[in-house]
Image (cartoon, rainbow, N blue to C red):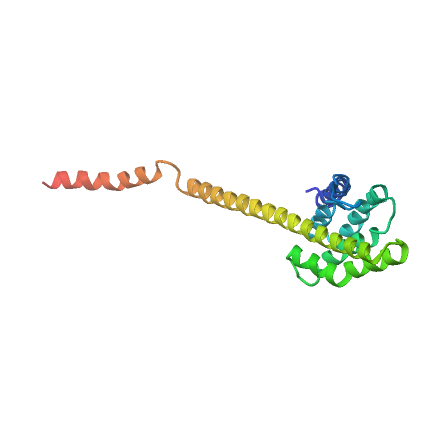
Length: 203
């Protein structure tokens, strides 16, 4: 058995999710006043579920690096990195396995205050602009968590369907091994034949 298999698989998943995090932020959707919807945190939420705490934080960092080019400043990075870490912690340590609720809890308690603090201190923006950014980041994050949750449900459904198919095939294969085709027929007629012959001789 290849003992390095699971580890190699996790590294491959990590690299793939890093690429998806970057791609999701690259495929941004411009709204207004320089505000964009970004989708990199979908990969971060998937990392939080399947790879754990540190992987989610690192993948969030990789995706957040693109915002340096998108917005020309690093002010969004702290909240994005914290989002990955906190959601992974809530998911695995606190067993809050609903990604939408976990992400909503993050933005209400930690994320939005961090955005307001960072942008107010270092962004030189009006309070109304800061609040708009905080609201946009929270809505964007929860929306991405919803999409990631749907992906997790789809993966879970497909895995259960595959397991069910395997169980049915195993049951069928076991039945065929124990009772090969024609076995019941031959067994039945093997017992019934002598009885018929015996009955004929007695008449």
